[in-house]
Image 1 (cartoon, rainbow, N blue to C red):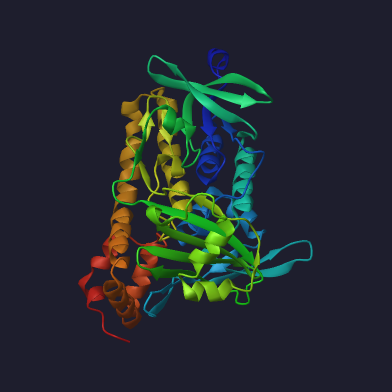
Image 2: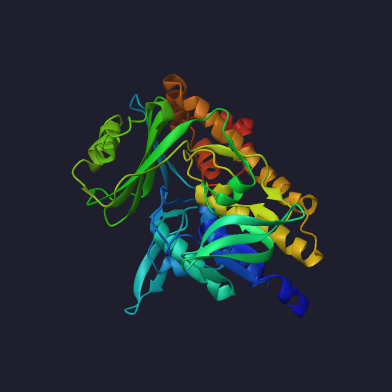
Amino acid sequence: MTAVFSQRFDCEVLVVGAGPAGSGLAAHLAGLGHDVIVLDKGPGPRQKACGEFINPDAVRLLEKLGVLPDLEKCHPKSLRGMRIHTARGETMSGDFPGIATKVITTGAAGAPFRFQTGGISLSRPVLDGTLARHAARQGAEVRYSARVTDLLMENGKVSGVVAAEGGMNRPIRSRLVVGADGRHSIVARRLDLRRPHRRLHRTGYIRRYSGVPADGEYGEVFLSGDSYCILNPTGQGDWTVGIVLPSNQISPQGKNPEESFQERLRQFPGAFERVRDAAFRSTVQGCGPMAFDTSRQVHAGLLLVGDAAGFYDPLTGEGIHIALKGAEIAAAVADEALRSNDLSSRYLSRYETLRRDHLLPKRRFCALLQALIRSPFLVDSLVRHLNRAPALRETFMGVIGDTLSPAKLLDPSLLLGQPV
């Protein structure tokens, strides 16, 4: 770094938020030799309203980032695939393509740990903390209890942030700011980039349970009209349970959220029976409306990644995947922009294009699923057809896991697949 550079900026890249998107991007850029600071408002990695599902391609991205060996030491729960339950009793269990098992030796005693190469589930404090430590090892400076309160602007370009640390507000200047501060992003709000979603208006609630008798290998989805419930095993009898319902069906203010969650859970008898005798491991966390868009994901001197750039719906569980993939795309564009000394919105807009090209096919697939689950007849027909056509079922699960393109589902030989 030159003396001129160090006098004008506190760092090259300032990342707001130390979740998967922020820490992932910081690790990429620090590994490429860039000077990176990560600011996170919390005192450390914390529990968030998240289903804690990491799909197969997200696992691949973690391995590519170089952090998977550290996560494997935490013994994440291996997931073979997903199981779908319709409101009228149809069930489909689908494995992610290419499931295999590898044995890893970890721990002081050298105990073998069997790890399936499908999806995994892991608590967010463990995932986020591991990614932040990896970013720090790559050379990034990670600072907690640093709450960003505003952006610095210079001639229409974002030139840094104002951060509250240790009871004081102070400016931190950088060549590039990355907003990775989640769905309530202060960065996106300061630039008035956040927009409500035109169609989806749902609220989600998360609660964690321990002592569940069955410790399965599948993430499970229970459908009921416009609502659904997700059960995700996290290992040793612990499960993360999420309920997503239309925002106009949420309980009135003042009602006990714990009682309200149990009441809503009864709407999904199969899920309720699974955890009815289990102990509560957390309070209820909620967020809503869940889906939202951003008018742009770039501004001169700025990129938005992860949930800060927009969120669709957790039905197919790709939130962490989008965060990690978006971080990878953003890092490549940011590296080129920094080396070219061009942080204009025109130059950075390549990130928008690449991100859109990556997300659009899956977004259309998810929109189709959203339409299907509103019709009990159609969703039952889909589940029955997937049960009869193993090749189609495997491809469907590959799309869910982001290892196959949704275009694969248009193959006539799959759509007309012969029953088992």
